[in-house]
Amino acid sequence: MHSNVNSATIARVQEGMRVVDATGEDLGKVAYVKMGDPEAVTTQGNETRATGLTEGFADVVAPGGREPDMPDPVRTNLLRTGFVKIKGHGLFAKDRYVSIERVRDVLDDEVRLDVGKDSLEKEA
Image 1 (cartoon, rainbow, N blue to C red):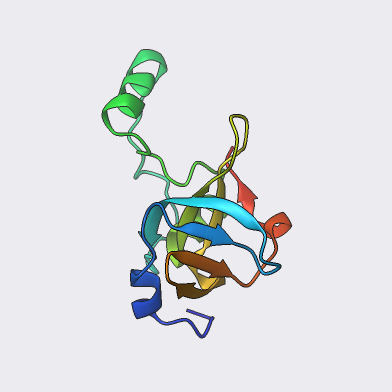
Image 2: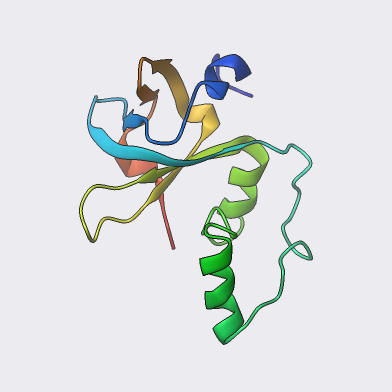
């Protein structure tokens, strides 16, 4: 990890925690946390092939089966570093993803990032 936040801090990030950006703006809540896999070079060949109906069914049976829902190379980079999925506020809000390298601190039930919301990746 490039940041000064250690894995013990990251391990405290839990679903449902509030997420704030570097300016203190409330971005939403943690929807999903995935620790990094430095060996994740590419996701090609690791995806299960599904089309049409089976794809929708797979989402129902295993929600979030394809996280992060991003195009490569962004997706591969997030898998390599680890990421937090942030559930946005409001009915039409897009979920966002942030590398766990951008987590500055975890205090009480709040995850604090070291970047502003404009630099976060939005779900495809």
